[in-house]
Length: 282
Image (cartoon, rainbow, N blue to C red; front, side):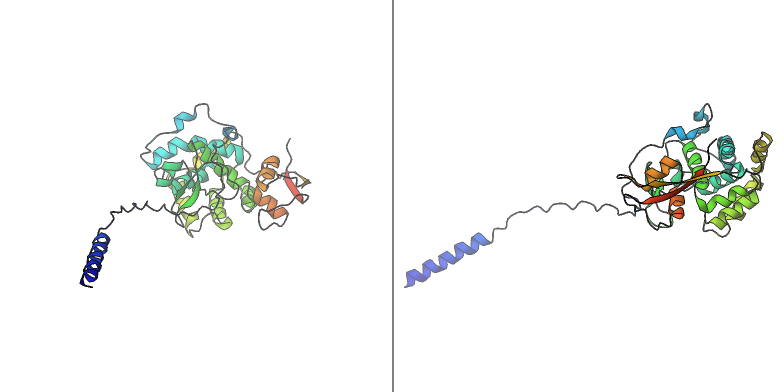
């Protein structure tokens, strides 16, 4: 009996001793969590901006890039000619373009502009097919358009204003009436800052930017645009069609297609009839 008790105690000690040997387990290091950003356009394809949209363009675009830009006056000297090119092509006062560029880009020295060549703070928006980057603005990690040359930013700014219906009334103003353009941009909702017009006008008058408008007008640009003639037709949606593709095909903005057809979103279906209206080409 004593032998049985002794063996039982010895067995218990053996089992307990084995159990006290702890296994050495290395804990896997936790990988840092990626920063979560708000991307309103998750399926954007990273492609370069089509350089063909830059016509007309200066013969030597390289001379327009000076980094770092030391002052507002140097910014004006660097980009005034580009702003005048845009004024001839689209009718937007060069003074307005320059003042917006100065204000939105911090005279080319702002963080967003330095990493994206985006001089006007234009966000991605639906349908943007170019490169992009994220930047904290009204919200954290917002999606902004990215360009491989500042000139593309100036051209995209012109297209942005001229292709959206809410800015259409601006182009009925005199091309050298920078004050009406400044107030009109605020009225159209370009900026939420209540003093946005006054800031643009102040920059224009402080740096005599209106002289660039006068040079273009003296060069033969019509002060008031002629009324446009439009062609109106329909498009029947085919398999594979998207609003972006249709807008590119007919050179009309997505917003304009939505407005003409009372569309709330971007969903279209095969067989759907869309109204299209675009300026007649000569």
